[in-house]
Structure formats: C-alpha cells, structure tokens
Amino acid sequence: MNIRRLLILLCVLLYSFIVAAKDMPPQVLNWPETGTPALRFTFSKFKDVGSFRKAHTYVCDTTAENLSGKLISSVNFALYLYDKDKARIGEGLISLSNVAPGETVKFQTTVDTTGTPVSVSLATSAPRTVSITVNSVPQGATLKMDGNEMGTTPKLVQVSVGKHLLEFSKEGFTPGKFPLEIGPHDVSGGSVSYELGTAAHDTIELRDGSVLTGDVESVSATEVVLRLGGTMQHLNRNQVKRILLVEREIPAQQ
Image 1 (spheres, rainbow, N blue to C red):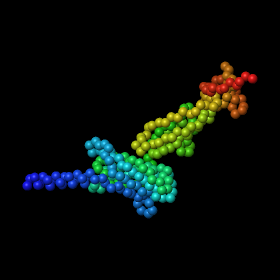
Image 2 (cartoon, rainbow, N blue to C red):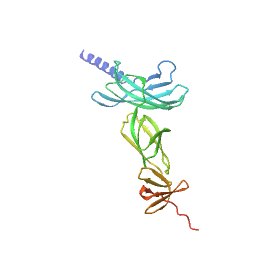
Image 3 (spheres, rainbow, N blue to C red):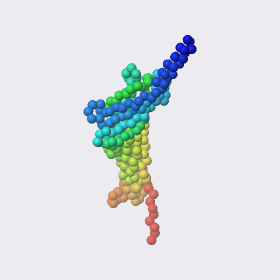
Image 4 (spheres, helix red, strand yellow):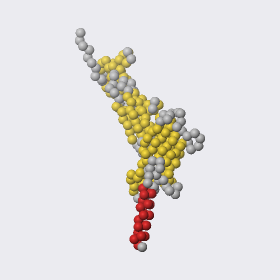
C-alpha cells in the first residue's frame, strides 16, 4: 500500500514538472488594441538570466512587424509584466525607429521584475532621454544632431534612446560625422569628443576670444599680417593670443 501511494505521488510530481517545464506559447499583441493595428509584437518565453532575493532579470526574444503602409519613424512603448495573479511585477522599455512598411524587426527585451512573468501589456510612452556632453577638438565647432542645429561645442544635449548622427564643422577644419547610439539602460552624465580634421589654413586666436582663419604672411615684433579672403589684415601684435600654423608645401624653384 505504501509503495502504491509512493508511485502515485511520484507520478503527480513528474506530471507537475512536465507541465511547469513546458514552454509558454508566444504572446502576440497588436498596437493599437482597437481599430486597425499598426504594429504586431510577438514575445517568446521570458528567460531568467539573473536573480537576487526577490529581484529577477529576464530576457525575451521579441519581434515587431509593421502592419501599416507607412514608415514608423520613432515610437516608444512601456512594457508591463504580470504574474499568474495578474499583479504587475515589472516593466521595461521598447523603442522602435525607421521600421519600413511590412518590415519585421527582431530584438531582445530585457526587464527587471519581482516575480515570474506570465503575461504582458503595452502602453505608449514619452521618449526617454539622457544628458551627454558633446565636445570637439578644437572646441567651438558647430554641432548638428540628426540634421538639427544644436549650438557650438562643448554642448550639453538631451539624446533619446536609439541611433543618432552627430555632425561637426568649423571654419578652416575638415568637417566630420560621428554615429551615436543610446541604449535603453544608458544613464546621463556621459560625454563624446570628436577630433576635427587637419586645418586647411592658419588660425589666429585673439585676446578678445575671436578666431580668424587665413594665411599668415608675416609676423614681427609689432604686427601680424594675415591674408583673409583675398585681403590683407594687419593686426597689432598685442591683440594676438595664439597662432596655429599649418604645414604648407614650398613651391618648386623655377
């Protein structure tokens, strides 16, 4: 009799283990929930990749399909996770950008929870931004981000999650571009520095803070002569704070 009960108990435990180990079916959500959907999200099983006491970190293979006939340039979602009792136990962030009509993108979603997620829901959210300082060598370069004027370097800017393009330009220097990507878990306080290309002309920095770019023709104890835009500028030596000379090719003697 005891052996029979033991066998029954073992069968029950084995069945419970098989049920528990079985993967959850993918969860599919359309956005928006009412009307004609523009996006379809598919979430696979959440995998526990780390835990400490009641805190857990899960990752989930996710796909998003653009069901609309238009380009989705940028959209952000708050992802809410619930346990088996429908209690919300965590949340994450999903950001999409430049998703073409009919395109399906695949990515991993990482979330922190206080339990085991069983179901999810979505809600649109305002774009999350971080503060970073953008600098250049030399400083004072005109900065553009995604084609928009941001001022001159060094510059503290607010950057949203996703991929961006920084453009630097300064008179007398070769302009340049720098790709920048902000992740969903990046925090404020970082910095970016870009070194501009070699100067094409000499640079004179005056004591009042202004900068002149041209060709230095001569320097004496009392005067600096600069060719600027085809005309000669005669500067008092005491006005000049610093002179940066570029290397020039010496013309061949005839």
